Amino acid sequence: MGDAGVRQRVDGRTLRAERTRQAITDAHFALLEEGDLRPTAERIAERAGVSLRALWTNFKDMEGLFAACGERLMERQRAEFRPVPAGLPLPERIERYCAQRARLLELIAPAARAARIREPFSVQLRRSRARYLQSAREEIETLFAPELAAAGAGRAEVLDALTVATTFAGWSMWRDELHLDVAGATAVLRRVVSALLPVAVAA
Image (cartoon, rainbow, N blue to C red):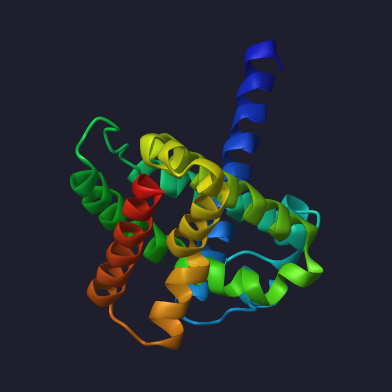
């Protein structure tokens, strides 16, 4: 077999492996969205239509699967993300930001609910959560830089409060504990962010 034939065979294997990995991560997400927050490897493989051996061939362990699913989730968020222009007036920035945050929080909600159960036992899930929080804080710091600067010595407190309000910690309280619908939770999110930022300006 010539070099072209070898490359074709290798490329074919790589493509099949990528399809299998995607089927497995898709199956994982599907089970989470259905409310199975601790799906077993057997359940994931069954939903993906692959053998358990194929699952472990593609992922060394559940930590490997969590890492791949984390990357897929970040890709989904990046695809949905639309930067809010930082030069807009504050009320419009808040409106656009909160509407987008609500969409993204609903997108990650099934995985975030599942992660809370397993995070104490998973280095990978804790690592993914840290990346998510850092990304969220950076967006707040960029979009609301003038208001945070105006907070002076209280900047860190305002940033921390905004981080809690605009990430899954706050969203879960409104959606899962207070049982608000998406519109209601978004309205509360907007009110909290609006309340925090004028305080920052006046500080």
